[in-house]
Image (tube, rainbow, N blue to C red; front, side, top):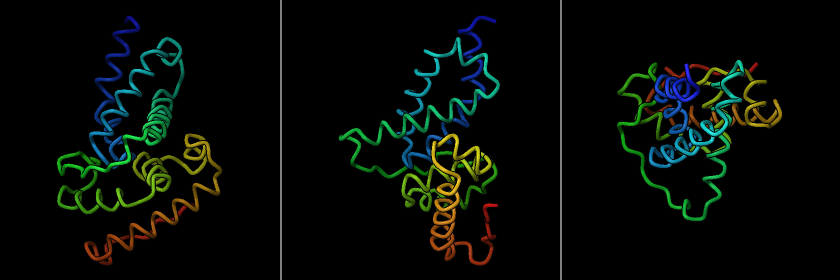
Length: 169
């Protein structure tokens, strides 16, 4: 398989999950599309080298996080658009709960949102999350605890006692 065909096959197979990740990180599907396109351009430029590594998904997640950082620094990105309701959240979440969860995630500060997406959507360990975000494990734990507490407070009226306790160990 040629490098271009391998790249196309990877993108075709993983794009929905990568788009969900970008949406959850950005909080806006339009920004997420820009961030994902930027990430895929960077991935294509490095594909000869990247195709040989074991964890391509981790590499691409890192590119998406970096592209989100870069995009947030652009001055014209200071306006916030409301996210449409049809953006996929995650296959495991019931559709009727998606709006409340999306809204609660958008209300989190970007650093907490990144930790929640990597820890609880991608199911990365504390150490893997710290490595991908280039922060300490203590920062991952504190950001996760703050984010979970904020999500619990925000979502409690909608979900009541159905919110389980999420702990980082």
